[in-house]
Image (spheres, rainbow, N blue to C red):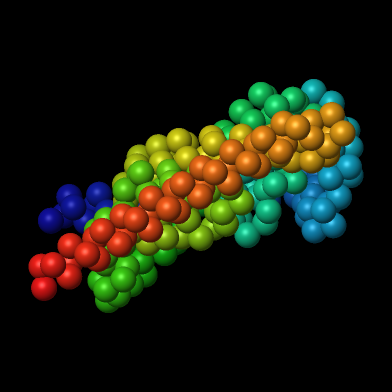
Length: 240
């Protein structure tokens, strides 16, 4: 019993130390460059893509690290749109590297957010799951595949998916793999669409093809889900 209590205290202390390191790391950026966060926030609020690109390029060879950091923070916060930084990455670093940078940064951000929610609201989440039938059912059927599907939907609010995952008993590794796999297609689509919209004159045909393909894929997924739901309802009626 003593060892169990010691392990729990040690684990709690370790998590609090990691959380403190995360907070201090974010705060140190503000101390070193007080105008960094306000500038980025203003550019995102104003949807000033040209301003964001110019600001990132002003860092020279460090632009990739600054962009990565911004994308991570955006996905930790959860409610700020990441489409502008994804588009900027595609325009600055090219479609391939822009996608890779955005993919790894967004995955890192949502994974840190998931971990932080577990640390801060773990006890509350357990009580909510125990008391709520809906959350209990969600906790029972949650899987990395469900996370991957949710993350694969373009422009899906990251904070919502992360919160639902954190309120379940899903292991950290499953959320990591689900986010890593699901984020790749959605980020690639965001980078490519954003890049082609800006360069509409050069890539209008490719953009049209992408939009039609995405519409066809999601239409097929919606049709399959509806058909599967009707089949399940029919089997349920037969049993009754």
